[in-house]
Length: 364
Image (cartoon, rainbow, N blue to C red; front, side, top):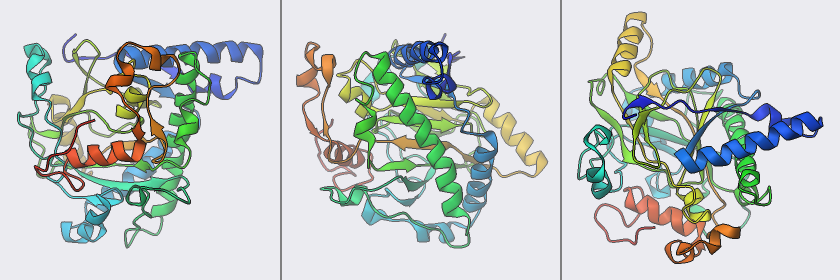
């Protein structure tokens, strides 16, 4: 199974969206909800098809982001907001440092080891973070709820980002609701905690003009700090994930589908029943072939990920819920804390906030 392509079942959101239309749709929706819960437990990820999220919208988004990142670096650096922990605007290359998971990496079988280095090095990728949804009126974590950055020269920016971002967010919130039903919890268990959260549309940009050699690690071995991450299809392959059993597998998103991954907040709230999925993005043979084809066609050599990070709200208490809290050791391993505190700790550990770059800070 090592490095094979993971063949995930596709969850059809249409059944969930139409569950009130008929008894047949209602039954199909429950089956799909169980499949969401099973896939999150087994793999930490799942594939969904949402009729509201069209490939055309994704293409419009990717086209605009390619044009943005094709600009000179000095133009893009105007959009950096270091004082906001890079949680809005641009994160420059070689800023984000993956957490040190060397002990875990060394324990893998040889065929399942990541390409990422130990100790980790800063990623060459760039990001643009764009806030989605309503912000809280009053919060103890204003730096995690900052206003968005609007780049100059892109009058369509807000509309394009909000159009695609809202569709990804709608899909992932429905997945959260389905997961709760699949886990035999109240349907709003996860979704209600996402209200007024600092959700981020977070395209990752990798510069294949500079970093296109086979074996280049674009995003080092890591798991996401948020609740659920949802991706549209990128124009370049290269994503690898690790299953619960530690098998390394390539991920290919079928046409018309979206990929959902579990993050640390989902692991926390389920007391470890769902594990935050480890993954890395590298330049492999398929990536090189896509780069060569794009170069020959005169297309952009920037790899843009279509990524949205869905969070729980900053002021919500993060702790195992329902029967997950009764599992042996769950309360001790996942003690209660504000979501904003968890995010701040994780940002420091990956060099995006105060406390990083060698400062000591407690790990979550």
